[in-house]
Image 1 (tube, helix red, strand yellow):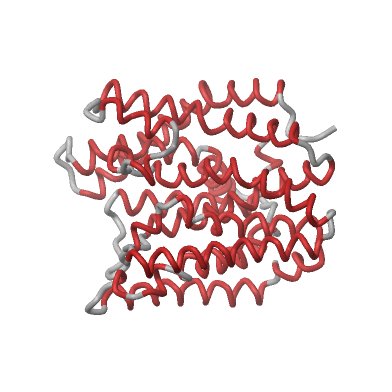
Image 2 (tube, rainbow, N blue to C red):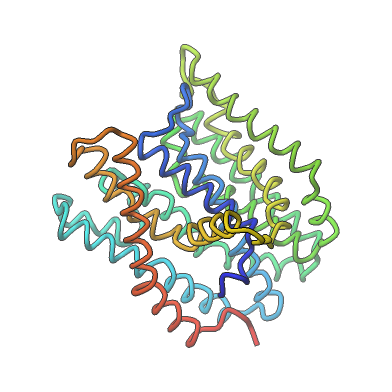
Length: 362
């Protein structure tokens, strides 16, 4: 896809999400009392909903044209071409060059099982990739069965989506109450985080099949109201974190909180989706456009590369510099390496994928 064909509004959301992660891991911005749902965690939640929205549009359009197993397999192949090569390359680099102490347990990371069966300490940012990868496996099967059961009746499909989200909340509530699981124990658990991405898919289904409703959702009043709810929820988390029992002492943040926050983000997203273009009628605006667009384009590589750079320059303080300078240097190196990886590794793989496996049903 050419840069001019990208949706600038969604690129802004993607850039915001990755910079929230960078700012947290770079120890530059710290919000007092924001426990559990960290600054980077907010960025990941935004990306979950955005990912569900973008991927949902692709698979929904294809399955509505041809609801077949072949269509699902084609979707999986395309996703694996996008996710696995760079993930395995960075995993191999970390294991062979930086730290091989994990030994044979690297298999948990190879098969995206670290969240539920081993631990994420070896390569922490991969916890969100695990959830996304299992989502990519589940969502086409869910949509395939949903379209079959509903006989493509749009209202029935919406009801089935809502029932799935309710089911997620019920089993999460049972799990937390029975085992008194802390916030972090729910946050990275694949089984209990699917609803965050499903909100994005539900939004994609509304955009495709209920365009009038989606247009209304993209209005400025709904955006402002949703933004207020977004800020209010963060304040709510900070308040609970500062109480004597902390965030793990209360049931709401560990249960329905995990569905309320992505739901709020889902209401924010249509406004950004409607801002697809951006006028570059001055040099500052052109610079801003390029920065946002390339940040969005490089988000995946930035996400995987930055922990390896930040660990050396910021956490281990390889060079004796003030934190702000270390952050600028680490971020600049991250962008440079990410661009090289995208241009000479990711882009050729994606070009081959697009040649062999079309993303549209014919």
